[in-house]
Length: 227
Ligand code: ADP
Ligand code: ADP
View 1: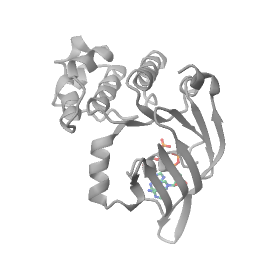
View 2: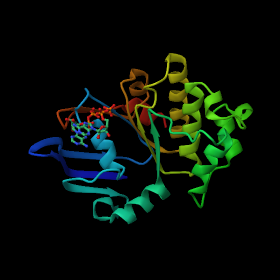
View 3: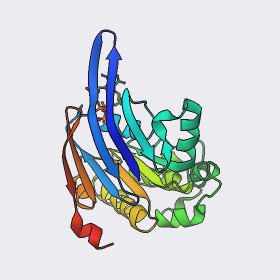
């Protein structure tokens, strides 16, 4: 379970202060599928970045189970991220001189407890592309490789920032289905920033942000009870 208590984030640029997060209170249950919505500049990326330790908070506390993230040193935070957290971004961030298999291997090598790469390739529908290089793949295929890479180290939670932002409708649908499977079959907690309404329909919790605050939190009881 992730607890976010009284979290504030202020960016200072010269004399200008921007309150990107204002007194955020939020609990994310293990195994939940959480979607963060809101207009540009409302604090979505900042929220994802502070929960996942890519950025620090100005004040407040974030705990993951027994670990108080907001008390970890930068080195401890890096280790925690490596061992427990997966990331999927709008940019696929694949290494161009490595094959599909080797890109996924990089994720697996980060972990003592990786998932089998062949199984992941099958899950994302890229078994036949295992020896291809990223430039030989479509955008949708590249994003599926990055999903497999993030899963390979078997993280307990996967953070996604606009994972379908660069994809057409068909490819978005495939990536969405993958995220849903990752949540249901692999039992991963998934936290997604998106403008894609297809994703919010499959969420347990939908968080709406505006001006650095959570303005609405919707829980989907139908999906929960179906588990
Ligand atoms: P969103 O993801 O919803 O578009 P962000 O979290 O990126 O919103 O940004 C929230 C606010 O914080 C915006 O006003 C943005 O300009 C500001 N901001 C974000 N990152 C930084 C930064 N590194 N330095 C200064 N201001 C920032
Ligand atoms: P998105 O909403 O698609 O995540 P943003 O434009 O909000 O994109 O932010 C992209 C990146 O730029 C984020 O990492 C954010 O922290 C950073 N950023 C956003 N606004 C500012 C700003 N005013 N100054 C510096 N960095 C910023």
